[in-house]
Image (cartoon, rainbow, N blue to C red; front, side, top):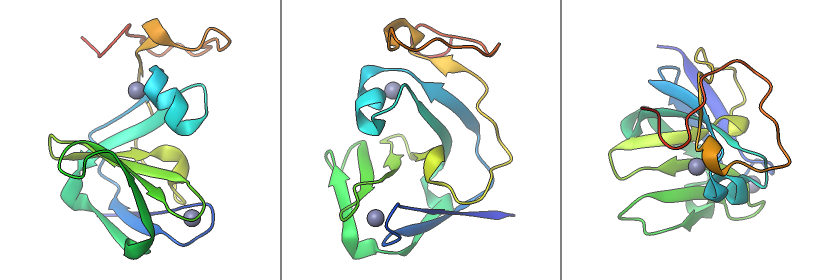
Length: 132
Ligand SMILES: [Zn+2]
Ligand SMILES: [Zn+2]
């Protein structure tokens, strides 16, 4: 299995993840917009056991309850790296990858609450909330 590298802006935190994402997508919800400071969050889902930190385990900033869904950032530069979901999956913020994943985002979700200043210009399926 091919392994992808990911890292934060300052380089203090690095991780490796198998190139075996089960889904990749864009979320336009207000939480994802605030977390990333962007119009939407491109992310991909994988079972949490397939991602491992290779550097910086002691320099993480954890946002949220560690026993539930929570976000992992670098404590120094603030980069958002991935979310650990309480269903056993991890959602990798695709912008934190160094290597290109095989998967490509295949739909937009929470389009019902997307930023009014951003227009989606591709032909991918759009869902008002979660995909149906
Ligand atoms: Zn950093
Ligand atoms: Zn979202």
